[in-house]
Image 1: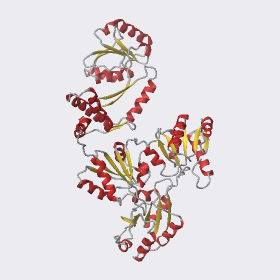
Image 2: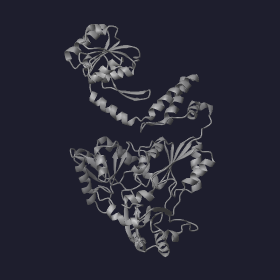
Image 3: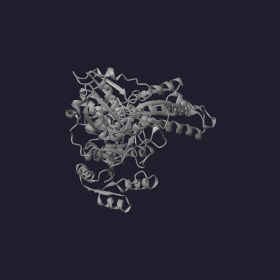
Image 4: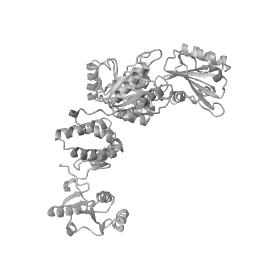
Length: 585
């Protein structure tokens, strides 16, 4: 089939039929400003209304050959095989192109499904043989192609006119188009960014002219408390558009696994008592990347302005004239207690909320004596595991009851979240004996007493499991997440970002559905060693046997025809049977 697009403005088109299918075709013809005559003995109300409004000519009778007079295009949707055959015979005798609904053999052309975003049109066709598939593909692309494409195609048309006005050679023009496309389109996610005129000017500059580089932009993005699902939509959009990501250790789970490999990844993470990249060097890195014209995301755990030094970084950027923005994130001080069943405010009990950093450094700044006097407040402490005993002592000395409920929550919102609760006088010893380690926060106040009743009691048989699968999302991946597992949906082949996120913590295993996926994992193991010690759950006996032949350390089989719920039960059984500390199947 030879694809073609027709300009029907002012052209006479004939539509035979006036039912629901014909009505859909009629709306499309009118949208293209065709002059339409409808012929049908019976007419549904919406078609009749269009005729009453003078938008179409309507002949309420059966088709006759003279209806084709002066017609340039014809469509039939009668549902009557004999009528369709007659219409096709007349059309072919006069050399008029005809489309007959659901009868490919009588068609001279086919009507594709169309996804429209402004002047951008994506047409999907199957040669008339599988319209059900075409409809579903259209629905899929409707979800994937966002509204930003409308603005993008408008700017692309303007950019093409500007390129033509330059009188460039074909090669130079193509270089401009390549720069425009590479800088504005994420081919993996199908997201686009609409460039401004300043960027268009940079795209137009020839490589041989040594054009002055334009200033980039920095987005300080809050990654949330840990769970990747708690990253904001705006934050994710910034990451999708980034040329470089400068991230903290606690922000790693929020990095999209399918971030393209051309995106620079800069790890400047800090840990308790260990600061591998000083703040001055982080500031210098942000300035350098922005001055190189890059779109930079400074990805910080929680919220950039809550104990994250975001204010300092913004000040440095602003003083240097670097454009920047702040994208707020969900701070751990609210999200982590909620994940442990602790509401930080409660009517009649806690009407104030205080955030403190218990790891002050230098001269003390927190007035524990004053905080101890406020019995209607909740106290949430960041970075306080190592100083919890001193905090408890100071609060009790300031007058807070030694029996005040307290909790410490480790790895809040993550698969291995755990918490301990005890009276204030005992919480430090309980946390130490339980082996609580950073990242963790403490909560002190009457609200902690509600945790036992409010903590989620929903059965999550795979809670704590961290499983790898290849994208896209599927019924099985959804079932695993519903069962409490964190499912890392990775691209094939793995990207640098995927390796970074996967390597953050031990995997419970990788689910392999096809031999092609196994090939990708084989290559990954041989080239990068990322998955050397990971066990596999393979769909079907043949795939499991193939994995064993290729020397994967542990291989378990999932039934070919089993439902997702059966797979969940199988994974739970295997994980529970694994020796303590073993994460593989």
